Image 1 (cartoon, one colour):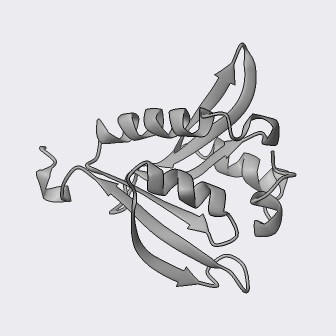
Image 2 (tube, helix red, strand yellow):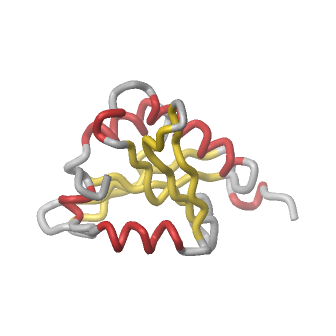
Length: 137
């Protein structure tokens, strides 16, 4: 999957992607269909942006089948058990992902011009069930 967009445009190598997935500070979940790995989601659950969905990736052959929405819903449910917010960034060159997140109820928080790649922006989105002060504990 590191050989497909958006990872190619981001310049992320397989080794970099693997290092992110092996970081013990991140939660990684695989998307499986009939025993085949078709994608994954990476969540960051530390700091003020706890509940940051760092990556949602599907193999190109599995895109456009509703799997991304199902994986997103499961990731959200997992985060919402632990935090009232889910955050994510989506690249300006990835309009399909942006549509997925907007359909799922994410709200655009802001734009980060040339944050990851020259000539492109990252858009910060949030889906919330309330402020951080609503968290008990």
